[in-house]
Image (cartoon, rainbow, N blue to C red):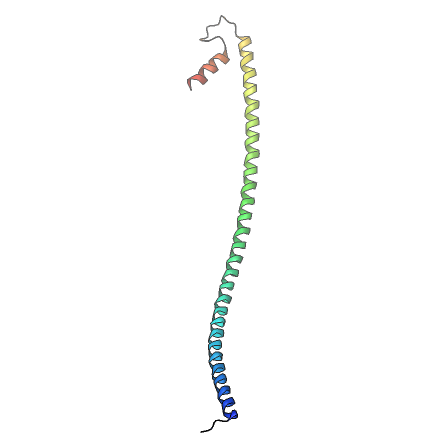
Length: 127
């Protein structure tokens, strides 16, 4: 039994070939796992893209609703200011009329109080 150099080299090459085959099988399984992960990643990216598109649409709708609310609020604020101005004018006009009544009515009149303003003040105090 004499082993030649050629047989030793063939034996070494056979072992290396077997190791390469085992490594290729392991590598193929890892690549399959990467491909599977890549497919799930594609799905996840698609879902994320759809969620981003939905969030964008919601944001646009929210901006539109906020603009409408702001416009309505501005309109109501203008009306409230106009009513407040009108009430101020009416109050000052009423005060002037009350002062005229005070001047026109003599102090000795049979009124429960000396002036209309005093009566109005007493009514305010009761409330």
